[in-house]
Length: 64
Image (cartoon, rainbow, N blue to C red; front, top):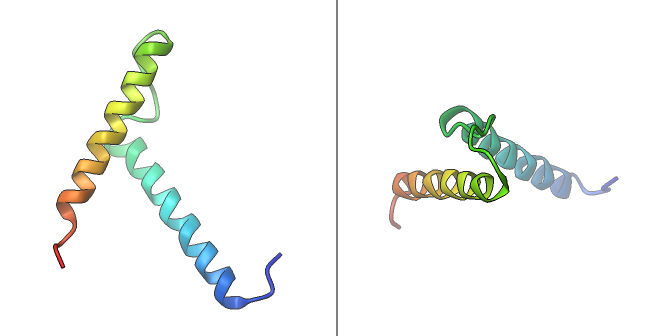
């Protein structure tokens, strides 16, 4: 679909990064199954999982 190898490589790496993030959410933060009932509880569960993941990710980043 793309003619440039550079663009293809960038898209491949972007997708790999997204899938790595989803995998980490599923393994470490219980994103694979929500045991909370109801839509409002589900939204809260997703929100708290994503915030916890992002906080853990930001703490691992080294200041430049």
